[in-house]
Image (cartoon, rainbow, N blue to C red; front, side):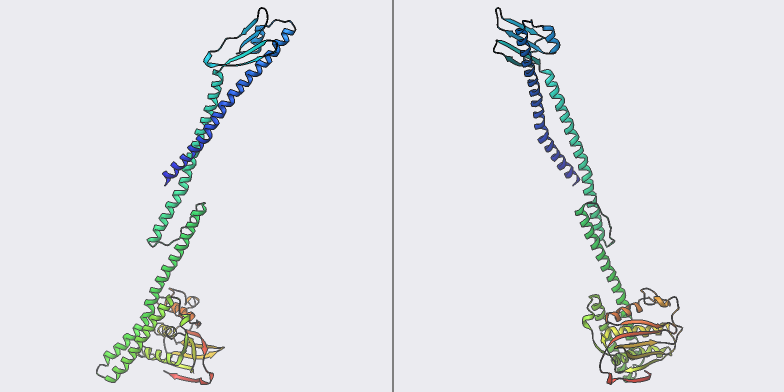
Length: 425
């Protein structure tokens, strides 16, 4: 491309110089010759007047005086008379380099002034050389500008090609390079915006993969416990049936979790909200997590207001509660109490345990991604808050020591159905 720019610019410059230089050279040549001719004509007329005046005064023509007054001129003067007077002054130039202008009066006086054309041709050549020098300078400037312009155009294009190749290889950092050329800067801005979008897309894909692995781990853990119970009670058909039904429910919830993750990836969660019965949802959570708590000698307790309904998605709310129960199981201690209540058109689900709680320096950042105080992944509470927000609610840490988390949901339903209960699940 650089060679094309150079050759095209040079061709344009040559054509421009020829179109301007040739007519200018012809015009300069003609102008110099016309000036020389007019000068000779003026000298011939002036000399004719002098000769006429000398004849009227009966004065002779002085050749030496004419030679001093008209140097480098060949002068011929013819005057009628008896005998005719012929006067010549100077050396006659060669015939092929001779320029002559004459003048004649009514009294029979004829004057011819000639000069050597070599001097005129020398002046013409000097002007033509000047024009050629200017043309060469113009071509040199054109070549220099073409080189600069070609570099200015090709180097950014090479840079943009490198950026595009880098984007294709997965390096989605915006370059933020600008080149001072509107069109190229527009391309660079588009590439930077594309790089930003690609970077965001890759980040979302990585987060989705991480979130999916973390969110699927909890229901898979519950399903594994159900299967372990079935294996341990293989000789007791009643227990096997009960645990098998619970495992089926757990598998269905696992399917719901997958649907929730896919919906979150497509940003469609708000369109899937519905009325959720909290009693059924919490009972299912207690059934799923009860064996895990009993295995470590701890107790789950449900208290508060029953018969509450909330607006959201069953899978999303289940995931939030399940994450809070798992967090209490792994990092808390003592009895875990789940309390439900309603206030200011909101439904509150509070999960609290009797452990040491969350350190003061960690409490303000407990919902930040990759923040964990006990060797965890640092994703559970972050994803739980995101799921709550997607359902139009919010998840808050209401007490760090001992830890107590509150899930606020939008309320629906008939207040007359409520009743207060308290006791172990």
